Length: 247
Image: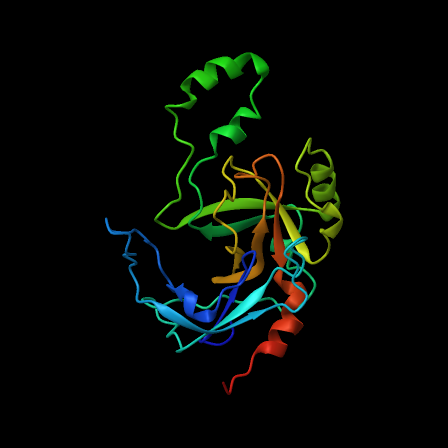
């Protein structure tokens, strides 16, 4: 976002050194050969500096945002090159990105929900038959091509209420705040495991706007409970404070 050699990302549970990251900007297919070598459809970019938020917490996942500064600039702009995404600078939500509206997420997550998660949704009378077929049923695989999913934004109040109804594995819902955006599936497909760090965006006037970065869901899938994202609009001052165009 913003500059050509600075990319907005979401930190994993713990950060490695910059040398351990390789980025494939504008990639679509990330297949591997038999030896495990990545056969991406774009040239790799290498990370010069990792800039995590100073108050990031691995426990509560608050301030779950970071920047990666690349070694070299990435050309952008033309149709054959990566297109920059806009970051709304106004803290007030655009109408098309407000509660109740649809947002889009892209990523290489699981393309189906896991069997254990599915079993939790079935009536007890179906469990015995389903368990019989469980050994032969795929639990979903990580996609090697870019996927997208449409999600609906819900209010923080609705988000907290849904989490409060969890029978177990309840996250620290007290930490869900204005720093976050909560979404739910509206098409039966959700941001399955593997989407963490993916962009939460909306389209307006021929441009894509980034308002969130996927932080976490519940278990391998999140069809029943909300997906929680970092609200990028709450961190624009922090982002600007870290950008130095002379570097």
